[in-house]
Image (cartoon, rainbow, N blue to C red):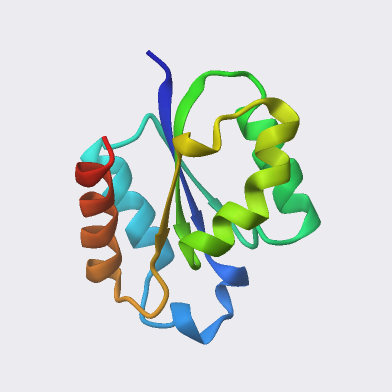
Length: 119
């Protein structure tokens, strides 16, 4: 069985929609819960190096499911489509969550719920 990966994308950490959240506390809480095989942070997946990050992250074929918390799920699907296609990652194995404007606690709860609903 492949690995479950988690990426927290924070819109450079300067977007007003992330001011109520301690991004490092979110990552630490999620890591301690052992919901994923790995967790990581990216400052802005929607830029060109975001595609490169996704390609490198998934290129080994070990990740079965990729969970991304950041902006709008529909937007994530559009942004990552080319990267997924270029390495043969099934877009149905991408689970997206919008965590903008949440507190640290709200973001952690939403991530846990995302995993429960999409094991």
